[in-house]
Amino acid sequence: MLDILAITGPIYLLIAAGYLTTRAGLFARADMRVFGKFVINLALPALLFNALSQRAVAEVLNPVFVAAYALGSLMAMALGVLWARRVAGKTLSASAFVGMGMSCSNSGFIGYPLVAQVFGPVNAGIGLALAMVVENFLLLPLALALADSDVPASAGAGRAARWRQALTQSARGLVRNPMIWGIAIGFAFSLLGWRLPVPAARAVDLLAAACAALSLFVIGGSLVGVATRGMARDVAAIAAGKLVLHPLAVLLCVWLLPPMARELQIAVVMFAAVPMLGIYPILAQKHGHDGPAAAAQMGTTVASFVTLNLLLWFLR
Image 1 (cartoon, helix red, strand yellow):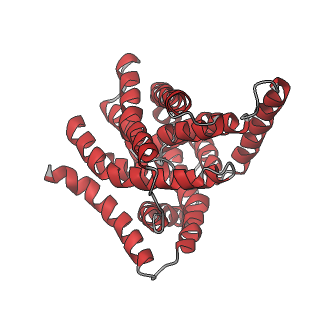
Image 2 (cartoon, rainbow, N blue to C red; image 1 turned 90 degrees about the vertical axis):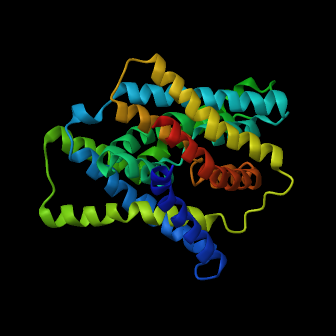
């Protein structure tokens, strides 16, 4: 068990450092948004570019990994929406964010550092790129379109129009997403066999190296001031869905689909087992669900210390 704690310990120590320094006033909670912008707009795209551009396309593209992650995530999202609608009696928009919380992982800020501890930064970067393709092209547009389509059943035409509008907005967001550009340019360099000049390559390396530690620090600092009172049932349900149901669904798909390398089998389950994406409360804010989303993120992040250690013990 000590060897497993040696993997997860640094991750949660950095999260704790972000929380404690922000709680002590060394940083403001608003500073975490600035650090987060640096990670999302510079460090993560550099990391994704490095991971993809330095490998042959045949080594990077793995349709079984993508299929397992996509199908398992869709199963978790569907079950989350179904629970929220049928059991908890929530609106469609609230149910969409429950489904999002159970199926959309924080692949860049927690998933990558965790997988990198086990399989190294290059393999983790490839898994991150494939997971982000699924999340950004499938899961997030679907959940947001579902939330935006929350209109009375009689307004069928309005619902269809809202679906189209939501999907159009998601497509525009993808075009402006620096991480998608990092993936696309990395694939282009890999396909064409290009290499950056040495000074530029070293600058990209420095940006990529800043990603893991700073992203974990941001997660910790962002948890300061989050209240969870009166939301125990929703927090417990979303945390259980994200930390248990999602990885189990992906693991089931890994068993049913054609075999792939053992490292990739473990990595895809690990990416599914981490807490939800860092901007989860921000996305929920538009529909007035940011309070429950922030509480769920807080509870899930704390509970993941136990579940991730148990997962690594099981997988080993």
